[in-house]
Image (cartoon, rainbow, N blue to C red; front, side, top):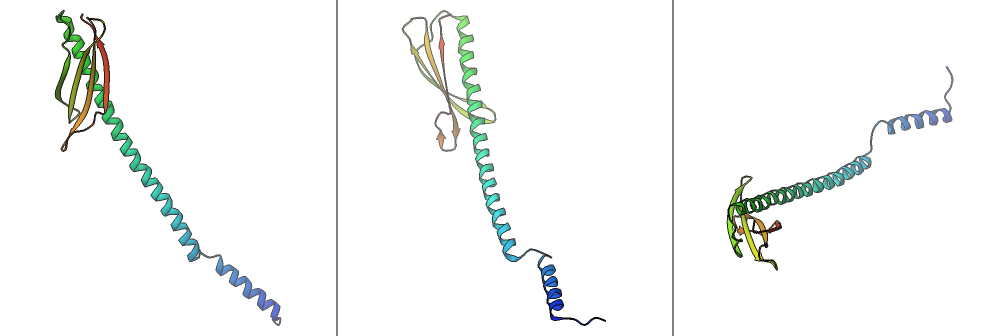
Length: 145
């Protein structure tokens, strides 16, 4: 058997300490990883909430556009049975579409030409608090015939 020297014992001790250090993560490394994960999670959660809000707004505007275009088409079809011009003024009605109640405000004004009228259709959702601001406005020009 070979006698052990101080250098060989020190080398063996350093080798064991090096192996022990590589066997896992330190507490600081774990805390840094958790902080990075928490920051990323908060950012992703915020974007997801923003996306849901944008999707709801887009859905409302799309449905309101359909309602407005549908009403303008009904006005144009109704013109086929009469030669009298559309009466100028404001009309309001409530429409049930897409499982929701909508307020439809139609403003008809005369133009320079006696046979042509400008029709503006405002569509707003009806909430528990009342009628909200319009989410869509469509403008059309409807003639005598």
